[in-house]
Length: 78
Image (cartoon, rainbow, N blue to C red; front, side, top):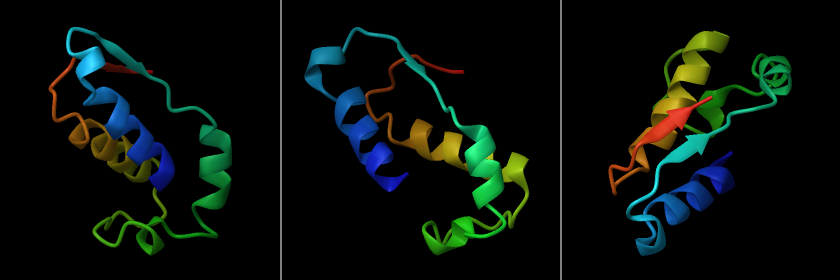
């Protein structure tokens, strides 16, 4: 996940995409849901405080991706 965030940040803040809208697909929610109780999100993101709640965890991950958007491009999460 951290690698995906780094890649997303480098792409979305690239000068090549200054006038571009981005669609962000956060797929494999079933895999995320099954791993969340076994591997706490806090292990990789210590500032996350939502526990094993899938909705809170998904919102947090979306927030992290949106925070990477320093260029303030239009991002449409799906």
